[in-house]
Structures are given as structure tokens and as C-alpha cells.
Image (cartoon, rainbow, N blue to C red; front, side):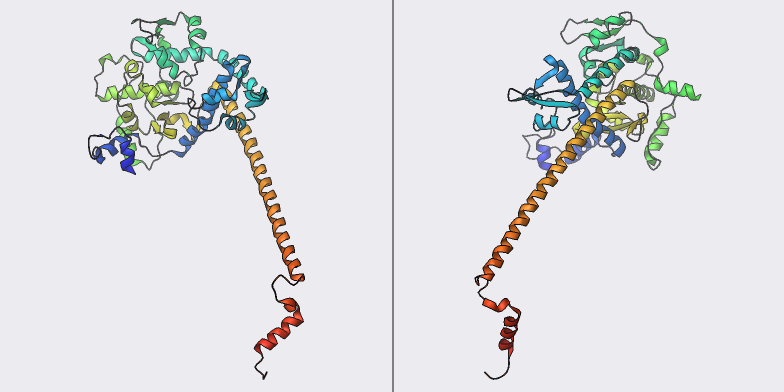
Length: 418
């Protein structure tokens, strides 16, 4: 089995009769392994269906009259990382999506309750604009040259609560803070640049928390006390002074403990700015140049299991900020998260209705099947009794009568003379 897996992996050399040494392969695969945290895995599972339905919601909102044929969604199913029939998926969430027939073709749109949540989300986005501007400013302050590629940032825009149209909704309104630049002239090189440094924002979440509690800034570890070796390594790492991610790294030497602490602190700060305190490792790695992240980012994250949790749930490698969660729940919820959780509750309500309805339908099917079987057995017994009464059931004539049966056995076992 492992041999077949290796054949499909990047470690297989078709010119060789066998793959690369197994020890080397397992060592590379182990870079992605981490002991599972059931609570955090549960939190990631909860988000999975929400992400898919949120994308479907956005598809509908972009359509004329905010309605679309189901077959149009079916064509996009693979890009949404979904399988099966789109119609079946939509019917699982009757509180979110309304399916109807138009000229013998299935269409779908958002329900009234769903549209109310969309409007509420827009109101919250307007109210949260100052927080969004602050979040974007802090990201640019940590980046080298205070610039970030627009395409790369767009990939993580929902993590940071940025609206889909942030380039025209946020940037022009705050021209004293941001501007769009393209120093190379290439099509994919457009960047957002920070115009003015904000010293009052150059305080990380760790420094802010330390200031509130009157202690020195330091990382916190969220591991069980039974993880003795991990705790020892964490305490050793945490013993040296904390390095702020807003400090210019020009004076730090690569490979030193100070540089590592600055990088860990930077990833910690980036994750603390996200709505769900998590991000795709692959997408985060796209910013290696802008944030000075190591090429083997996964190795660095796994080196600090007390601070970060790495999961490959659904084969999507995700890093979670451990201190951002209490069990499977976020410690602090952004207003945008609260609205989006209402969307999740609406989804669950619809899914519960769908499952309950199908459960009752299955019970009815079983009941009808049982009734038919019962009737069939009853008919068989009636036929058997009818045959007996006609003397054709078992060819024993009146032997089923008690007196006849008694006389039959007496003659069969009688030892007297004939």
C-alpha cells in the first residue's frame, strides 16, 4: 500500500526500481504530523460547510436578480471543492437556499432569513471599517517596505475580515494612509503601500496583554502539563527577551534565537489579526518575501506546538493560534464573526430539518415495507390453511385432527401382535 502511495508522490523516481529511501520519505512526511487536538479539529470541521455555503451565497449575490439555475452552480461545484449533485446540496439547507422551478428548470436563491443576515453583515462591515483599516495598517507595518501584493492579500482577505471590494471600498476613502502602487509595471505586481507609519499601532497583542497585566511580554503555552519535553523546550525558548514583529529586522542575524523569536512573534501577530485566529499555511507562505518568513514555514510552526497548532484537516494545512481558543470556541469574537455564526446556526437549523424529514421518510418506507411483508406472510398462511382444508396441504388427510393423530402413533409404536 505504501509502495503505491509513494508512486504517486514527488519522492518517486520512475527511473529507479524502487522509491527514495523510506527513512527520508517518512522524515519529510512527519514534518506535517502533530498530535491531534479534538477541540481544535472540531472548530475546523465546523467551518468547512460554512465556507462552502458562504461561497455559494456570494455566487448568488453576484447573479442578476440574485437567482441562478442549479446547473450553473453544478458547473462550479469542483472549484468549490464539493462533490455530488448541487440540487441535493441546496436541499440540505432549506433555511438558507430556496429551490424553485421555472420553465421546468430548477433555480435557487437566498431565503428571506438569509437575505436579512446578508443585510446585517453589510451593516456590521460599515460599523467595523475603522477596525478593518487598523488591521490592514498593522499588516503593512510588519511588511518589508510597508507594501503587500494585492493578489496575495486578496487570497487571505476573508481571514482578516476585508470586504471583497476592499480596493474600491476602503483604500480610496483612506488615501492619507494607503495608496496603490506598481513599481515594476507588471500586471500582477500591484501593491498596497502604507503612506504614514502609525507608532500607536506598533504594539503587538502580546505586548498589549503584558501591559494590562503588568508583566514582561512573553509567549503563552497552551499544552497539557503531561507534555513535559515540549514544555521544557518552550520555557527555554521563552526565557530570552521577546522581540516585537514591528521592530525593523535589519539588525538581526539569520539563524539566531533573536531572529527566530521575531519570526514566531510575527506569525503570532498575523494570526491574532485574523477573525478566526487561523490561516492556510500555503497562503501564508506566499508572503515569505514580504514578511521574511522561512521557506520551511511548516517546520518552524511544528517546532513550537505550545503556540501553534498545525492541522491537515480535509488535506488543507492550517495553522491555528492555540491561545485564541478555549476548547473549540474562540476566546474573543469579532462582530463580523458573530454575524457569520448566525449564518452557521441557520445552516444547522436547515440541516436538522432536512435530516429529520429524511429520517421520517425512511421510517415510513420501512413501515410500508413491513406492512407489505406482513400481508405477504399472512396470505401465505391463508393459502396453506386452505390447502390443508382441501386435503392437499401435506397429504396426511385427517392426521392433523387430535384423535386421528393419537390413533396413528398408537399403531406405529404398538409392540403387540398384528
